[in-house]
Amino acid sequence: MKMRMPSVPLFNIDPYFSVWSSREEINKSYPVHWTGSQNAVVGTVSVDGRKYRFLGSSDDEELKQVSIDIDAMSTTAVFENDKIRLKAVFTSPLLITDLYYVSRPVSYLELSYESADGAEHQVNARVTVGEELVLNRAGEGRALSYTAEVKNGTAVKMGNGGQKVLWRSGDDVRIDWGYFYLAVRGEGRAETVVFDSMYGISIEAPVNKSALFAFAYDDIDSLIYFGKPVKAYWKKDGKTIEDAIAEAFGDYEQISERCRRFSGELKREACEKGGEEYAELLSLAYRQVMAGHKLAVDEDGGLLYISKECFSNGCAATVDVTYPSSPMYLKYNPELLKAMLRPVFKYSRTDGWNFDFAPHDLGQYPILNGQVYGDNLPQMQMPVEECGNMIILTAALCKAENSTGFAEENIDLLRKWSKYLIDYGRDPENQLCTDDFAGHLAHNCNLAIKAIMGIAGYSEILAAMGRTGEAQKYMSAAREYAASVCERAKNSDGSCRLAFDRPGTFSLKYNAVWDKIWATGLFGSEFFEGEIRRYKNEALPYGVPLDSREKYTKSDWLIWAACLTENREDFEFFAGLLWNSYNTTHKRVPMTDWYYADTSDAIMFQHRTVQGGLFLKLLMPDK
Image (spheres, rainbow, N blue to C red):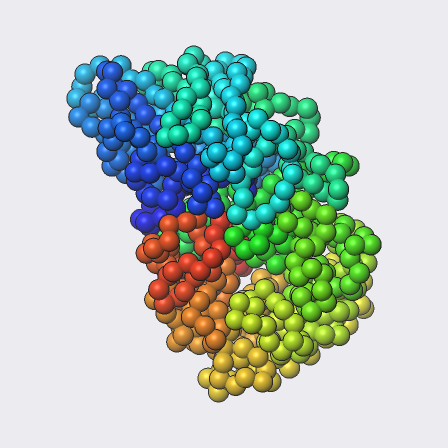
């Protein structure tokens, strides 16, 4: 990868178990949880009795890192001295097309070496993990270690001595229940250690040309869902974590090859559609998006795929986070997108939701008992935003699966929300929306476009169900509203305003991209060409501002806006701005989606699932 990654993925499974290196040289400092809180892990090798460090921080001599590279599911670092050349491959096999591997909480580290001087060497590897992986912070509680039995391996586990499963929610907090497992395939020596004033566990094993370590986490229960604890998908048939680790050792060669094939195909298609820099963006985003979700099953066996709104407010199953993340799932596994929407539909039918529009969220991760955003105050809702999101995503699912089954299950709510968009979407009143960073405003043109596409999406659903007359009625309304936008919002340069009553302004009209994907023909070429011209004129070194009011932008919406063009060079120009922002950013965190387009400085968000929106170009029809 040519990009200087803002943060390097190491082992990444879910919102609580996602560990990164804030430096490209992974043996210069301890790894961190995605929040930036230290997650101390140390890796060393002894070569003919002399110790060298390849991961984390310690007093041992440093093995020089000579390269690092990633693909969608693996990170490969190479180290060398005058005796050996060591390769460390971190793989989190989050195969999006296979629900079991999406859920299984086991990540790999494969170590292998070759002689650099032609001589034979005795090489042992040691991995040490500190208490920070099972406590919110070191010292907050008491970590204890236990022996663990894993078939065909050596393992040790560690957990908080005071287990309180799912006892709290929050954003900048880490798991302090359940058990972390460190294991190695075959024979090794496990022990309890103290290092850097921390309690920890360690395993040492010979590297007979290679050694395979596993990092695993059993959270016991994964979520509270409408008052009841639910378990991760991988447990649904009674499998234990020891079973999962043993299985992971057994299938490593086969599953790592599947990961390589998937990652290679992703890169190939992304290069073909958007260029090399675009492909690097997708490769870096993939594990982050997957690790921002948790796959569980409810008491009836239904799939739940729950996002955490990382470093925003910690909300769970946020609808306007699901909306931008959706392209990756529409592309590779629509079943997971249904598992994101299913809880929202369920909640909308409960007594806990008393509005005639769609909710914003289902709680604060990992507790999903109902919306927490805005304390359910009417003025703090996002009616047009969330109604449009839910309908558009359901329509997109119908097209992706060539089936109306999911829509038919929820047609009562889709009908109600579509009526809301008819009544209030033509010229939205002073409502909150997902882009309210600079304050919400009335007459928001992009919000009106979302309403239009929601109405059109409902029409598409009805047409697919054979209800032609109703479908035509809704599509006629969408066409009328679209014509109104193009007339009332047009600037003298051909672009569309931020708000109907603010001449000369602009904003990214990313919601209009569904008109191109669905070929509904609501907005003509003049509209799209005017928008792209304005975006190019407003471009700063690292992106196009979200709108006229500030210089910050959003990565997801920048790529969606870039998809409004049919010119390959224009798309690569916009994608290149985003690539430059990550390549130069000073804040070394997992990919932020909110940053200043003039400086590349991240503002707040990181590790958010909205980076699934970068995959949108892969959904665009070929011309």
